[in-house]
Length: 273
Image (cartoon, rainbow, N blue to C red; front, side, top):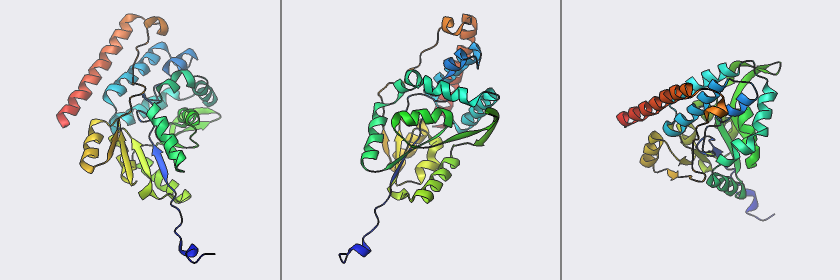
């Protein structure tokens, strides 16, 4: 053994933690499957339309921490009694048509870059694991941390066992670091939203991706890297009344409420800037 071998430093183990919605994909995975759930008989056409419009609001205005909590409560109430395997099957069978086209090419390249450098890649998302895991498999990512819903006898109860948001994301990263020996000072975290500051704060290389106004301000103040992912361009297509099987009056009414919500969110942001 050479003289210096006994004192040679152990190579640092590095991780790259990725948020999912608007960071890897140009949409909200939570709202993505409204049409597919309707076609499977899980929700009504009106509820499917509401999910599509909620997607539009999220894409244009983002979500505050309070809005994320409200969405969690509404969606967990909606899925109460649903068959877990049916949800998994829908997510997996429609993955290529619903989600794959919305994956940012830049995110794919960045994930590949980290893997080539020997880094562990982890997707950490507030979306439920049944929706996150098919996306992770599509990207070749083997580790995920996501919201976990309680199930009994193969059906959702409507209760949340683990809500992967904010401080909970940070604690999950700390737990993974302890389990796998990650050097957080050498690790990376990517997110679009200020609600993920607890996750970004604990790594040596925090990166804002398509950041909301609050996160962009903080990133500029702290000298963090800012990335703009544009391929694909995030688009929203309003489902037709024929597709949904409901009247134009219902569509117009819900759309008006959604447009008002977008306007109010933008007005509130301007006022707090």
